[in-house]
Structure formats: C-alpha cells, structure tokens
Amino acid sequence: MLDPSKFLADPSAVNVAAAAQSEVALGDPKVIARDVNVWYGDKQGLKSVSIDIRSRSVTAFIGPSGCGKSTFLRCFNRMNDTIEGARVDGTILLDGRSIYDPDLDVVELRARVGMVFQKPNPFPKSIYENIAYGPRIHGLARNKSDLAQIVETSLQKAGLWDEVKDRLNDPGTGLSGGQQQRLCIARAIAVSPEVILMDEPCSALDPIATARIEELIDELRANYTIIIVTHSMQQAARVSQRTAFFHLGVLVEEGPTETIFTNPSDKRTLDYITGRFG
Amino acid sequence: MTDQHILKAFDEDLRDLSSRIAEMGGLAERLVADSVDALVKRDVAMAQRVIAADDQVDALQRDIEEKAILMIARRQPMAVDLREIVSALRIANDLERVGDLAKNTAKRVLALDGEYQATKQLRGVKHMADMVLQRLKQVLDAYGARDSERALDVWRRDGEVDAMYTSLFRELLTYMMEDPRHITLCIHLLFAAKNIERIGDHATNIAETIYYLVIGEPLTEERPKLDTTSIAKVSLPR
Image (tube, rainbow over all chains, first blue to last red):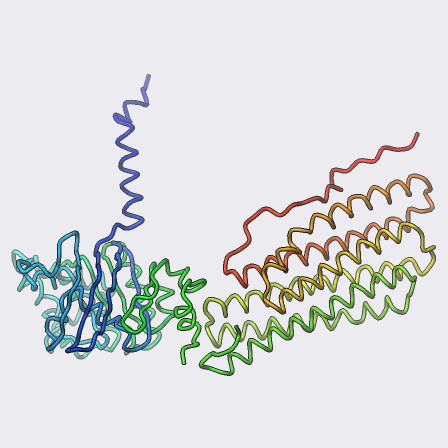
C-alpha cells in the first residue's frame, strides 16, 4: 500500500513554502524611504517623503510638472549627486542597507538600480555594444560567448531580439524611437539590476511603441522592482500596482493603483486625476 | 461637484448627462403614476397614452447611453467622473425598465377593457403604488442632491414594499378561490402589483448606484428581502 504521508514528508514545510510564496506575491518592501528631503540650492524640491516600494511590482509616481516625482526617482540611484547644488537628506534603504552609506560603491548601486530615461539615449555604438558595455565593465561575463549570451537574453527580455538579431553590428541610433527605448531597457537589464527606474519612458513614443513598452513593463514586473514616473494617468493606471501622487514636493497619497484612480482619499489627488487643477 | 474641470466642455457634458437622467426620472415617475391611475379609474385612453409615452423613455435611455460612451472614449474619466458616468448608465437602465413595467400595467388596463368594478382589491394595488412612487421620487431627489443618506433610506425600506406585495398576493389568491369569475381581474391585478413591486426594486437599485456614486464603494450589505410570495401558501377553502 502506498502511504500518502510519505510524499509529504513534512507537511508543515509545504505550508511554509506556500506562505513564503504569498509573501512574494504581496511584495516585501524592496526600497524604504524615510523623511527624504531634497534641496536645490536653498529651494526645497522634496519635503519629507516616506514610502515603501514593494518588490516585484510596478509603482507609478504621478503629479504635475515640478511636483518632485522625478527628483525623488533620481534619489534611488543617487543621480542627484551629479546635480550641482543638490542636497539630499533622510534615509533610503535598498534591501535594508542605506544607499547613502559612505562605504557604498555608487557604480555598483547604479548597476543594481538601473535607469531608463524619457528620451531614448543609446550609445553611438552598435546594438551589440550598447548591451555588452555594462556587463563588460561590471565584469559580469567570463568570456566572449558568455557576453554574447547576456546580450541575447537581455534583448529577448526587452522584446527586441527578433527585430535586431540579424543586424547586431548596426548602430543603435539607427533604430526607430520605440526600438531605441527597448534597447535602453535591454541595456539596463543587461547588468542584472534589481530595481529599474523609468522616467517617462514612453513620452517620446507613438501609441504602438508605447503599448509595446507597457507590455514589456508588465512582463519585467515578475523579476524586477519597477518605479515609473509618468504624466499619463492612463498609463499609470494600466501598468502599475501602486501609485504615489506628488504635489509641490510633498507625497500626498500612496496606495493601490485601483484605489487611487477610482476613489482617492485626498482632494488634491482627486482634483489632479480628474483634471480639475487650475 | 461636476464643475471646475480644466476642460469646461467636460463640465458641460457631465451636467448635461445628469440633467437628462433627471428628465428621464421625471418621465418614468409620471408613467408609473398614470398607469396606476388608468388602472384604478379604468381609463383606457390614459392607458394608451402611457403606452405611447414609454417610447420617450426608451429614446432618452439610448441618448444617455450614447453620450456616456462618447464621454468615456473622449475624456477617459477617472474616479468621481467615471462613477458619475457609470452611474448615469445604470440609472438610465433602471428607469428604462421602470417605463416598461408601467407600460405593462397600462396594457393590462386595455386587456381588461374597462370591464371591472373598482373594488377593494384595487385599493391594495393603489396603496402599494403610492408607496413605490414615493420611493421613486425620493431616490430621484437623492440623485439630484447626490445624497447617499437619503438613497440609503430608500434602500433600507424596500422590505416594506415586499411585505405589502406578499400580503396583496395572499389577498388576491383568496378572492380567486372565493369566486372563479374574479380570476381574470385578479390575475391582471396580481401582475400589476408585481410590476409595481419590481419598480420598487429598481428604485432600490438606483439607491445602490447613488451610494456608489457618492461614496465610491459598492453597497455590499445584504438588503432585507421580505417578498415571500415564492414560498407563500394559501389553503383551499373546504
């Protein structure tokens, strides 16, 4: 006779695994920000912002121009360090470790926290080199075939492989706008980041290219933590699981995307998403 | 609450939608009142007018639906604006059904061809109709004022209509048992009463929609149901 209990050597282990899985589904905080302030000279661009960014999900930052959403996005990979006169204080933890830790290697941080910009900005090099550059300088490939594999996988993940596999030596700048943006996403993916920051990644693209990027974002969500700044409310509603609304440097409201877009609790959020801002 | 959009045309669209619902509500209300009047007064001409006027309610519903769809396509409404439009669609559907039910009652007046006495049984139907009409009016006022509390009041009291319908059902059954010559009239009255009870249900649906519109969350509470005619028994006289 078969004893079913033999197949479940330790039933409690199964439960633990199931519980762990649901934890992942809910998304633990990958990035934790507390009381983050940013000044540009004596002008305060961001005022005491605190938020938990969940792993393996898409968080959208929305708000009118100048509200601080891009400023906040740039804190996560210390891009504000490069802006003269910019000063950041507060706490930002990536997997529990402060990204402003003086011992932290900023180059390594930016590999873990990749960025895609508003305008596609491929290097003036071949498609292959655009992808291979990052893994090479970070020493992620042991040899040439390893590197070629990374290039192929990254392009595949970005949904660009089939379109470019026969012309990898052509210049990246010769691709269409939408392809260039996917190339930039592939380039970001190539260094195996954990978090991908996207600053209005579709604002320079036509609706078809936009749809392809949105589809891609949805696929990437399974493996990466994504934060996207967008001016398109519809885009935020389509691609994100959580949405944060910023206004005048303040994080007004953050919550599940469907709540923010159907029944926000703050009047300022409501006014903004329904087009009532004067 | 439907004003102050950056796009003023959007405000106008929303106001227009809301005023069409009000217009449709007023029309549906009058059809219900007239259909019951026609029944009580055995007024065939009035019944015919009710039947003809139902077309206007249907036309308004199509109009509202078209406008709402166009607004969704054109404005991509969010939050309260989206609820405003979805609510208009739902309420228009309910009011269209209310018009149909009034029309059905009017048709029964024609079927009976004025050949009946305004008996006791009719008083029960009339009384129930008055109650339902009052609910309908209250719920339409609540829509106009975006008053979720007043809407909830209608919602909570739907049970009273149901209870009245159940008692009318028993009463009519008893009449039919007493004298088979009453059967034709009583069956028509029973259907008229059922129509009115259904109108009450639509008023309750509208109340739920108003709650959703104002509060932003669906009403999940279980509504008190007191219509027990599906299990009601009346034993035959010996």
